Image 1: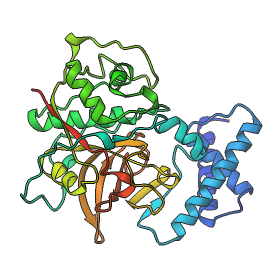
Image 2: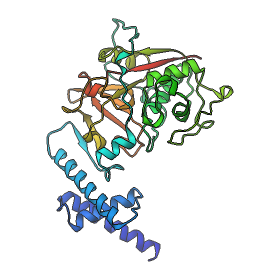
Image 3: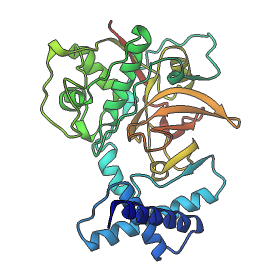
Image 4: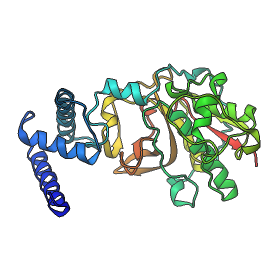
Length: 337
C-alpha cells in the first residue's frame, strides 16, 4: 500500500477506535479490538504471538472498563488510557514500583519550622529555570533516584541559576551501602546521605542512564553536584512540607501508588483506599509546588514516567490529608556550592 493510503487507513482505524470508545462498545467486540490495535500502534507494541495479543487485549479491555466506570462517577480526577494500559497492576508494580520495603519512620526530622507565613500557592516551574524536564525511569524501580536528582537539580538551580542534569544511574549502581537497592527501590533521604558522604554526583552525560542495576563507575574528578547537609521533615508534618516547598525549593516525597493512580490523566488525585503509613509507601516523586482548585488544596508533583503520562508527566494530589502517606518521607538537600 502506498504511504499516503497507509496513513489514510491508519487514520480511519484511529477514528473508528475513538468513536467506539465514546460509544462504550462491547468488551469483546470488533470495536474494542480496533481500539486496542490503534493503542498498540500508538505505543509501538509488538506481541510475539496471537495468544499474547489476545491476553493483552483482555487486560486492556479490563483496564478500559475500570477507567470508564471511574470517569462516569463524581471524582475529583479523571483516568485515561496510557502506556501502561496493557498491563495488570501486579505486573506494573513489579516493574515500576519498589520491591524492597522502605520504611522511613526511623528518619529523624530536622527541618527548622518557623512561624512566618507561606505563599498561598507556588509553582517552581513558573519562577524560572528551576525544574529539570520530566524523565522516564523505564522498567526499573528507580523512581527514588529521579526524585533525588530532580530535588538536587532544583536546589542548585535556585541558588546558582544553573540547571544541571544529574546521573540517576550512579545512585542505582553505587548507593547500596546507604540502604538503597537499585532497581528494587530506595529512599531520596538515603540517596542524599550517599551523595554527602561520597563527595559528589556526576552528571547524566558522564554517567548515562541504563534502567538496570550495574557496577559502580563513579569518578570523583567528574562530580558536578555536592551536598553539605540533608534536611528531613518530621513524619506526618505536611504543614512543614508546605513551608519547605513554599520557602526553600522543591522537596522529595514518597507515597503509596494504588491501581487507579496508574491511569491518572488530570484533576486532583485522591483515594480512600491507599494507606498513610511510612511502611506502605512505594513510589518517590518531587513536589514542585502547591495550589487550590475548586476549594480543594493540592500538591503539584513531578513524576518519572515520561511526558506522555498524566499532565505532561506531572500530577496533582490532594493536600492537607497526608494523602497516601505523601508527608511520611519528605526530604531535601542543602547543596554545597
